[in-house]
Structure formats: C-alpha cells, structure tokens
Image 1 (cartoon, one colour):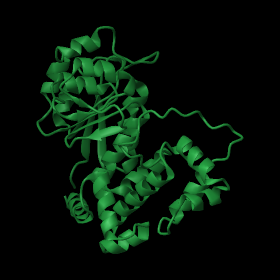
Image 2 (image 1 turned 135 degrees about the vertical axis):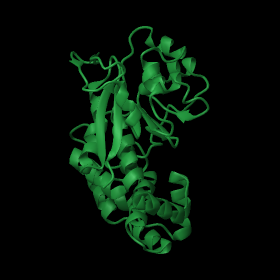
Image 3 (image 1 turned 120 degrees about the vertical axis):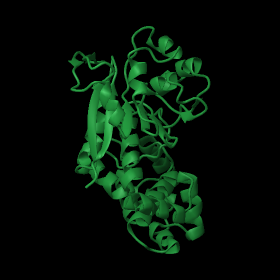
Length: 322
C-alpha cells in the first residue's frame, strides 16, 4: 500500500491559528488519504496572531519530504512585508531551498506574500485577502493578482483569500485529487458547504438578514432535489412564497449570486459527480442535471473548469487509477 499524500504546513511568526488548522481538519476527514505535518522555518516555537505561542514538533527538514507544502496565513510584524519585497529572509530562504522541485505549493491569505517573495508567482495568476491586495501589488507588480476570487488554481501553485476561503481551497484540492464523493464526505464531517466556486467574489457587501425575514434556503433545498426539471425564477419564488423580485433580491443577499448563476453551478457540480462515478453517456448526464443537452453541458463545464466532459472523465479516471 502506498503511503498517504504528505502535506507539510509551514507556520510562520504571527500565524493565524484558524488557518493553520485548516489543512489538518479538512485532510484529516479523509480516512488516511493524507498525512498532515506542521513545521516552523527554524524548528523553534512561533507566536500566533492570538494570545499564545505554538511549538511544532518538526523543523524545516520535513519540507523536503512533502508532496504538498502549505504556507499558512500570518499577521506580518511592522516591516515584514517590505522585507519580503527584497526576497525571502533567513532562515525562511533555507527552508524553502529544501522543497523538492514539483512539490505542490499552496498559500492561505497572506501566505501568498511568501510565495511571491520567493519569485514563484511572477507572471502567474494568484490571489490573497482583499484587504491586502493594494500592498501586494505595490510589492509584487509582476504577479497577475486577482483580488476578487476565493482561490486560484494555477496548476502546481494554488492561492486562496482569507480565513474560510482556505476551506474552499482545500475542499477543491480534495475534489481534484479524489473526486466529489471524498470532498463531500469531508465537508459533511466538518459541517461546511461542500463547494463554493473559486471565482465567487471574496467580499459581498450585504447585511445579515433580520430574523423576521423569510429565507430562500428551503427553495434552494427543493431546487437541489429537482435539478433535472426546468427551474425558473418564478418557480423558485413560488416555493419560497415570495414575489420573483423579492426572491431574487433575498437570494442574492444570502448566496452572493443570482438564482440563475447558482443553478448553473449546482448543475455543473452534479454533472461532475456523475462523470466521476458513472459511465452514463454525456447526453443522459445533461438530462439528469437539467441542461438542455450534451452541447449545453459541454459549454457550461468548459466555462467552469476549462475542459470538456470527456476530458474531465478521462482525467479523473486516470487520477483515480494512479
């Protein structure tokens, strides 16, 4: 039996405890598919952004054995960001030097500053927390920064926005590595949504709905059970007992997307699951998830992940076999 995929999380001075725990929490819900280890750049304890210090059991030597290295987000000390613009300081540079070529690199939030300082993001698309984007652009103008997304998958380097966006990124990694079933099971164990599209906006300016307001959640649950049917705004609004205009407004407040865009995302996700877990023909899958036909499914899947249904199915089956 092959060993689990080894993930090494690098904790830097000022690390945010919540984000530091995301890889272990998400990957730890997969029944042994991953091994998650935590280290520091010099083997010494590091302060956190909270009121305590943590001591990892390992130092930088473990980075050389990693299949995936995660740079957890941190609260920079004064002058830290400016220092990173000049490159990685010691002992961080030495720690990075031990990472094997081809290792998958992942950052959460401000961890992208470290990848950029190492020169690994030059000419590549990346993201970070929306509040840090102006400073990031000043320091690293050669990075194609996208401040309006939850995460960016650029192949062997993946970056995410702050806090909960790290959860979205690690569920995306699970889905990419092992398919929707594994990712969905992990999400259920962690009691988090199994999927938010990476291109979803980081920051939605919307108030928390008042307790007296009706929610659109029941209509969303009903829609998920009837994706194979033609679903219109009027149909969903009727199930929520709202006017279409009110429903659309409250839906956007709660979800951060229009009902139509949300439906397309759910249908694409259901189609991906069927492509992974069945040998159904493309037209039949399209019918089961509510698309007009195979052509419509191909268009929407390509828009979402950049490949056709057949290519996606072959790629996933090849990963599963490997």
